[in-house]
Image 1: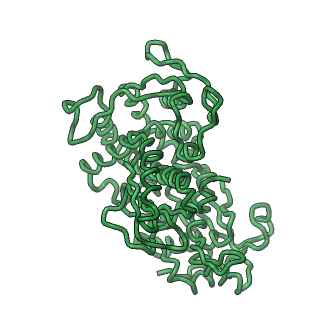
Image 2: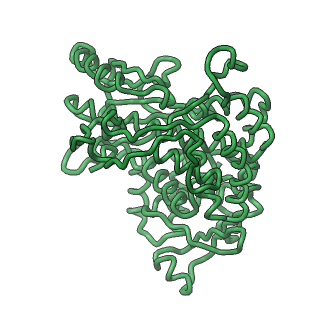
Image 3: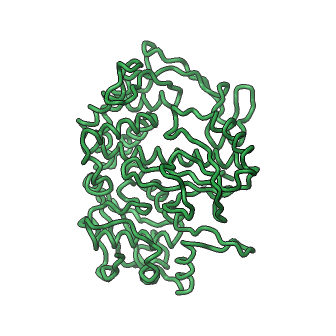
Length: 454
């Protein structure tokens, strides 16, 4: 079983405990300091000490917080680099499992931070390609030392490259292999689950992604010149991905994005904001919506839709791309379908005034819409709504956090599988974001226009 499932690792937009100011980069362990001090000292050596801070967005610090919560006992705050909205990766574990749980929490936080940073770079590269390349020239420079620093940005010169990075660069440059004059070492074939002597990584190493020296392939280097050459085509690749649904360009753009280190990600975003503070103002709206060329169609169910939607659907959501091809949007969880429909209707109703929806204030609206778009009993619909906040642990009297975050994750995962990571950006909702597809590109049945969510 995955560590995220073992420790119920998930993201929340709010928490019920008070944290110190500027909490991001800290991992708070909830409990009594006297009972945890020895364990925390051990983890600072075994886990934090093994972190390669050059490859992470935060230099993590473990701290004990004299507080308690039945739903979680690990909290890792992280911040969206554009909106600066803070949200929280949380987990629940027994204290003798803290090593694996903390490692898995860091891994989850880093994955979310990378996705947020890459989404922001996508917007920046598409909205102002000339500025993007100008900033890349400033951030990624040859050599090391203070003489090469500009505007306080740390320079990036020769960076390590293994087999994966080599393949990424090859795709980005449009070549299949590298010439000998690039001074790249030959990569060794290594089993990801075992080191060269046959030893498997420990559980916390696997959860965190720590690779021992004996497990590493031989490394070459990737020069700043080659990285700039790869990045120079990124705005064009992204535009082709959004506008023409070109699978080949999508894969190349995705591999190119994977070459950004966390420090490069953040340095590029910070410098672009310095030079053009307005570039991210419409981050979740105009730039992506105008580029995506998507339409959303919501229609009453009919028998010809049976291959896409089961009989219990009363209204069906279809996504139409630039080529006119339509595909159905469904989710693993029916409540997620209702939540997404709420965001679709709200985008049409409120236009540029739209915001993310506060579900705890929308019981009546959720229940009424659910009954309109899905065949279900009133009792079950009310249970679904209550379950978004808190739900009972089976065979106990304990309550645990509800499933709202699970539903948002279901929506995001489904959209990413449907259209890819980049194309899904304007389609995602929840946790501070709303549907970015422009209202004039959303077509809903007139009966749904009666619903209001603000």
